[in-house]
Image 1 (cartoon, one colour):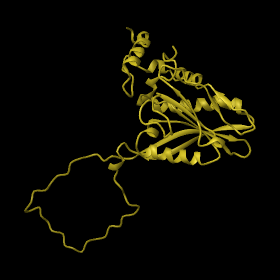
Image 2 (cartoon, rainbow, N blue to C red):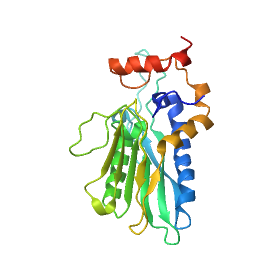
Image 3 (cartoon, rainbow, N blue to C red):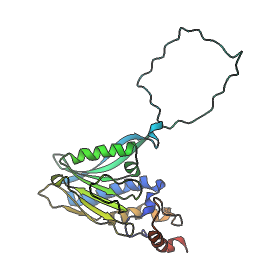
Image 4 (cartoon, helix red, strand yellow):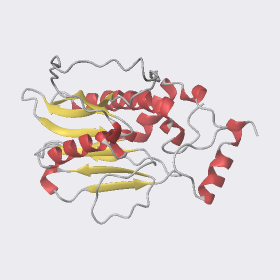
Length: 259
């Protein structure tokens, strides 16, 4: 059974599913583009790694080197006059290694990065090291001669900076062509709408490629057996839906909830 949603399936935002879905989608986009990009271009799957924590201010800083020297002050034993305090077992917040995968369309022969394709993850949009790392990468690409395609299929957290845009859409795709900056194309769409196809910019002498992201996503949903793994009896994850959207979702999921 295919996804019940006409566009992005919000249940794929569940933490238990997103990481795997994100990786599958990255590879699926690469596989879908490759036949149409040959023989002039190829698609590389790249990885951005950083340490992150939900509460970065709580991280314990450890110097690169600590030298301990013996004290010349005599050690005084207070055990005879004071009750010894027993330590409690506690946990310290530890940074977690995060790996974000993204795509680069490269020119065969020169290996020049023509277009960077990013599919945002929750850590990219949530305040913290993940967002900082991505925003630095984003600025680097925007200041280069490479095009940028930024795909945001997440309702939760703050969208990436855009000038003159009201935050009214659930999802968005940004296509920034190097020769047209600071202007860019913004594809906005809502929960009830299909994911729009977008144009993938290449070198100026080559026609842009139409990317049917909706079909790619549905293929990932099917191959990943998400129809067997998602419990549609549970509420939609993420931000609270408007009353009209909630009623629409409830009606849509009746066959999947056994109601």
